[in-house]
Length: 82
Image (cartoon, rainbow, N blue to C red; front, side, top):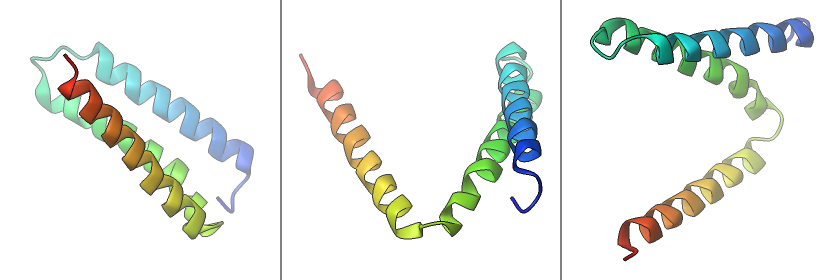
């Protein structure tokens, strides 16, 4: 992130969208290429979001825990609803 922030934003945006489109356009029979595109998408997302932990790791960790709690409770309600 010490590089130009606009370059980082552009590369991560184009890379994420390109990898996501590659994942969606690849037929399910071609599992190796589909997994490689999915891995590239996850890598772009991780490279984009990981510098945020240098700003305030406590707040981001708390937000992650709260997000897990909300998603987990919604999943539980959805799984047990009649």
